[in-house]
Image 1 (cartoon, rainbow, N blue to C red):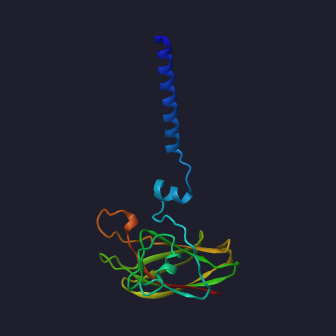
Image 2: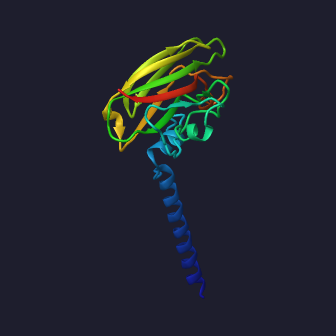
Image 3: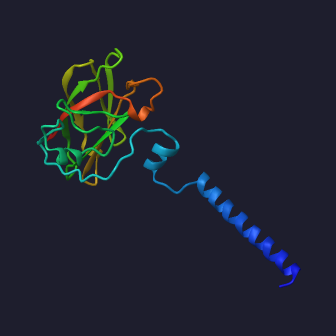
Length: 198
């Protein structure tokens, strides 16, 4: 191979490598990822990255989320935002937690949640905002260390493809220690839940 051919080959290889790097750079700036992935990892607009769950549930059943309940069945209703169970429930993690229930055909439902407020650093009342899909269905204040039962009306329109997806937002979640990432903040403990026909 002549020296001229070698120079052309080197330039061609350099151009090919530069093109490959531009493609990688473009994909890094414009990743093809799900909305949930983008919200959790890229825009950081949520602290809850939903994982697949079966959402198996029988209407009218009370689910015990404490360590005394059926851990596996309870876990399959919690896509993200909850710790492992303790004697007095599952602590919320971050500023958002989710629940998912397979409920079948659209119908109006009543949701009953038993929650306990977490008291850290004398943070005061816990603010809870509840959404069914993207539709707001209620708000509650829960005192620190208080255990209360809350009931919310869930419209039939919130059920999509046989599933009810609930989101609990905690606008004043507690920073557990200075500088800790907000995915570890706390707000409430989930003790039990029940969905019943309205």
